[in-house]
Length: 497
Image (cartoon, rainbow, N blue to C red):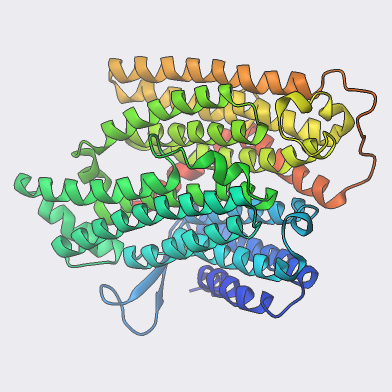
C-alpha cells in the first residue's frame, strides 16, 4: 500500500507530540509552531482524501501486530478525509484569526498552555474521525471533553468558570451514557472494533427478541452523544460556554467539538451497529422530533437575546437541531444533508464567533446590541464578514446554508411520509423566518448610523483578514458546488456501509 496510508495515524501522533512540545515553548513560539503544524496536518489529510478518491476505496491501518478482531484499527475513506480536511482548516483559521484576543483574555505565562490544549484537542478530533474502534472513540472523546473545558476555563473570569463547570457536568453525563452504551454493545456482540461488531449485531438482529436489548444499548449511546453535542433539551449550557469563551475557543467549540460527537454517532450507526438495524429502532423518529424542537426553541431563544454572542450561541442550538433532523429523516439523502450541514455550520459559525469581538472592539468592548450601532461601519471588514456568515445562516442562495436547507427539504420529500414532510417543511419555513428576523436585525444595526464619538479601527490585520477570507470562500464554495460535495458525502457513506 502507499505511504499515504500512514498519514491518518501521523495526524494523531503529530498533534499529541505538538501538545507536549508547546509546553516547552514561549507563547508566541507555540502559536507559530501550532499554525505550522496545522498546515502540515491539512496537507496530510488532503493527501488521504486524494488517495481515497483515486482508488475509490477506504483503507484500514492496523496498529501493532494484532489483526482484527483483537487489535486496534484506523480507517480512512472519502468522508473521513473530507471531514478531517475541513476541521483542520477551521482550526487553523480559528487560531490565526484569534491571535489578537488571546494575550488580552489569557495571562501571558499561560499562552503556551493554551496552544498545548489546542493541539491535544486536534489530536482528539482526528482520532474520533479516523478510529475504527468504539472504545478508542470513548478514550479520545474524554480527551476532547477535558481539553474543551481547558480552553474555556483558561480565560479565568467568573462566567467562564461557571460555564466550564456546567459544561463539564453535562459532558461527563454524556460520556458516562456513551460508555454504558458501548459496554452493552460489547456485552452482546463480543467486539469493540466496528466491523466485527456490526456483523455480530446483524446476526443478533435476525431474532426480533433481541431488538429490545439492542435498541436500549444504541439508545443510551445516542442520548450520551446528544447531550454532549447540545441537542434539545440539553442545549442550555451553550450560551455561557460559547458566549464567554475567548474567540478562538468559542469558534472551535461551536463549530468543531459538537460536530465531532455527531460524526462519531453517524459512524457508529453505519459501521458499528449497521444502518439497516438502526432503521428498525424508534431512535430515528425520536431524533427527528427533538431536532425539530431544537430548531424552533433555539431560534426563539436567539431572537430574544440582547447579547450578540448569546444570539449566535442559541443559533448553534438550532443548527444542531437541523443536523439531528437529517439523521432522524434517515436514508442516504437525510444523512447526506446532515453531514453537509456539519460542514456548512463549521465554516459559518466559526466566522461569526471570530467576527463578533471585532465589532465589540469598536463599541466600547460591549457585545450588547444597543451598543453595536454602526460597528460594521467603524470596522468594515468585520461587518462584511459577519454579513456573509449571517446570510448563510438565513439561507440566502450562493451560501452553504441555502444548500443545506434545500437538501433537508429534498430529504423530507424522499422519506415518503406526508406527516414528516409537512412537519419538516413547516419548521424549515418558521426557522428561516426567525433566522432572518434576528440576523437581518443585527446586520441593520451594525450598519446603522454610528455616533460621531465612536472609535474607528483603521489598522490592517493580515492574520484576521486571511482567516476570514478562507472561511468565507469555503462557505461560498460549499454553496455553489453543493452537489459535488453531496456526491462525495454519498460515496463516503457507501464506504461506511
